[in-house]
Length: 210
Length: 391
Image 1: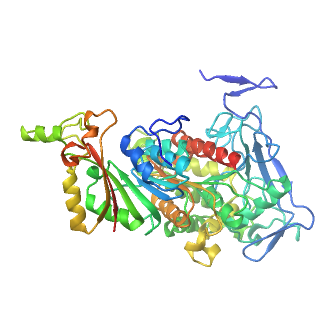
Image 2 (image 1 turned 90 degrees about the vertical axis):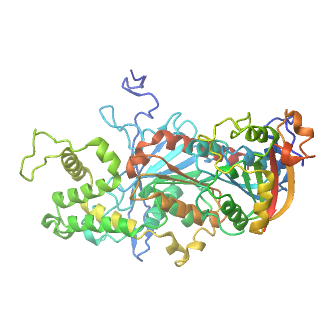
């Protein structure tokens, strides 16, 4: 079943294109853990459309309350700590969307994901996109529409490019099963992103396994 | 100004209150016995309870609320028009409140071993015609739950949409689906633990020692309460319900009356006077022997006992979703204990939500942080009711 961006019976909807793509990848009845699940939008869609057995992990109390309002079970967890609450191989898919750059040790969280689940799905922001590169070239850390905060206030403590992510996976013995470049819905570059993702994609989704 | 609602009898209560409630007593039928974990049986058991809201025709809207150590069945509302204080969870229970009496039929019963109307050590032993006192059997949390099952059978209630409890009440809430997995559709365990820590056992021990070393306790055969012992037990316990932050904020180093130190051992500090007041008030309303029996039941609580010590099998038959809530400054039931419960449930495949609410109030937060707690409880129950209805 495909998940349309704006289906006729419009509830629930995902507005972020990377989440729509992730939702498409999850098979029916899968057991899914979303790390940094926010207010539970993706999980709710997965439960409604894919009959997934869902679980979220989130640190922020307000977001947890919104998960509960949506009927999404969620465990309060800090992704900078080991996720010992979750047993080995207890989920089919572990999702981490747009969070990798903000955790203290991206490599360790990937290993935790693959300890807990058979497959990891990661959506990462590409700090190597053209506009950011141009700003770097002129001698400043990038501030763009996608990355509106300055270097000293951004939560993105590990800016990385898509090629950096691939290198890390190779070094850590993590297999990349799939790579999908993403750009935002109304982004004019969305047709070009698949051609030269390193330079043109704003995000990418990687499916990884051990 | 607070809005008031006119009641039939002309009295008025704050809006959102259930108004006047009447406690009711259920008495075991002749021949009906309560089997206890220690091997003994009790007969002629009385259980005092209160109900709020209306029972749905299909009895699908029942929520059982469990009170804490010193609580009772009086959850919300008032017993009479002259009653100054409402029930202990007034902020959570009432029309439009998180435990919404417009939707749910809410039931709360005084626990076995207590002193607020349900059979306990102060009750008359039908075998001797005299009060049990220390001949009352040592009871467990599971015994308290079993007694409540008799009440539900009497009321003809076979399903609980939710069991909700904080502190010791949370232990009963956790025990319910373990004892009766087919009856419970969800569990809300607040500021509690799946097994009591040595620190809690230690505080309970000191409290009991204070009572039992008071000469007026007379091996439990007192006519007047052992005031000193019971109030010391309460003062000690009360400190464990607060936090360093909440005490600093509430009392600081304020002196109670004098301008300066008395250079005697009287109550100089506000915090001393407060604790003294709490101790004295407790003696007026709580029975010393009940305190011994209930704290002992708490000590014995460890869910793995129900699975021969194997914590991984405890919830094997329990399928219902859980909401597990802790409070960041609670050092009597620290947040790690809630996470530990959540871990066991996750391992068992249950739907679990586990939230540590930021609070400075210590263990007492489960009574005070009703806004945040209320939002969690409301959201959880609303979705639960949707799911149960669509089954």
